[in-house]
Amino acid sequence: ALEAFIQLASEHPATHFILLGGYATEEFTRQAKARLEGEGLLSRFTLLEGHTSLEVCAELMSISDVFASLLGRGDMRSTSILQATAAGGVPIISDLPEYREMERLGFAGLFVRPGSVEDVLGALRFVIQNPASASEMVARNEIYIAEHEDHLKQMDKLLSLIDATCADYVGR
Image: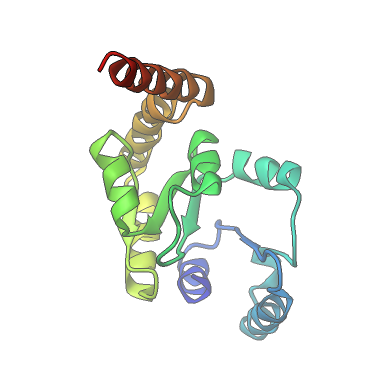
């Protein structure tokens, strides 16, 4: 992601990037900071080391037009992806079966190979060059989130399915 962000920052001076480190990523953050200083781009990046509170993450999500989550396997319907999507960001995410299933249900995002700078950079460029398409993705995701990721609706649906399964079992 950092390499794609650096390239895009060089192409588009109005862009600003926020990098969230997370637990045990301090060394990676220090390396990124040194690289950005060397490139003369540090002022265009906000780097958060270590753990960041949910409140700060939510605030940053609310001001972001685009977000990237490039984890590989094991990222099963990430809460942070759903939160950033609900906040109105255009998702650039790893091309994983879970997210393709969400797409089948109406979710819209740009799917990339997590290790591919070209894929990530291409997705970022697409968002910048196609603001109408980006707005359409945000609108689709508002509908998707309301229908498929609303906690209360989903809990009611889960309880109904449990009740129906129990009723079938008792009726045997």
